[in-house]
Amino acid sequence: KTRLYVGGNFSLIASTLCGPLARIHLTDFQLDAFGCPAITSGGLAGTVFSILEYAGSTYVGGLFDHVGATPMQNIAELSPTNGALTSNTISTVQNGFNGTVRTVIPGPVLLGAFQSICVGGQMSSYRSGGASIANCLYVSGGAKAWGASGFLSNGTGVHAMTYDSASNNFFIAGDFVANTVGQTLGYAALDATSGAVTGGLLANNAGLGAGSVANAVVATPGSLYLAGYFPN
Image 1 (cartoon, rainbow, N blue to C red):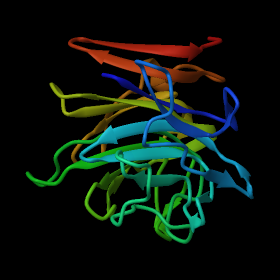
Image 2: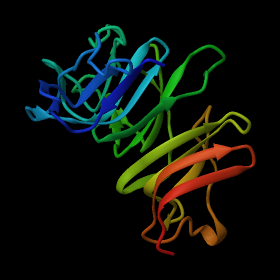
Image 3: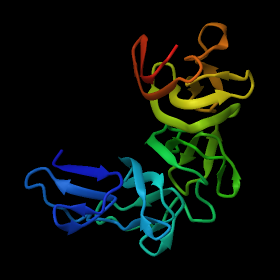
Image 4: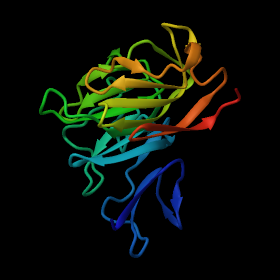
């Protein structure tokens, strides 16, 4: 790879006005043709938490309400060539996610043919309909394939997701509870095709313990690794 995406909450790269999203060449560390799409929240620089180049587009998740002059709500689809909004954009301010998007990862191939992306964060609606803190969207047009049910954000929602092809599960990690059992989870396993919960509860339905927040999750054959704050 010869280029690097950078996202966060910033307004300058060296002396160039730029932020909170940019792409630079790794050969000369200069901005490339992707440039610095203007992503704002309330007229000020927004915050980008996740960037995914996938299926011919660059997907950006975070906390923002505009990309340039176009209303966008917390998720946007950009051209990886020049950073412009695509004609197939998956969000508008009326129909995006109503809360912070913290992670965007490649999703499964659904119904045998349709690519998807999966999104986690702190939200309860998408395109004016119901949504979960973990959702999968079809890449073409952005219709919601599924939203995991039975979860409530316990502050900041889902922080990280990973996919395990062997089990066809998504593992989600963050700061959330399962409203079906009333216990802190911090992580869970979801069926990648339907979003149904397939596991994740530890002994006695205690999850990771009260007050725990998982910030990262990695699945390897036969193992699952979590990192975060676990007081118990």
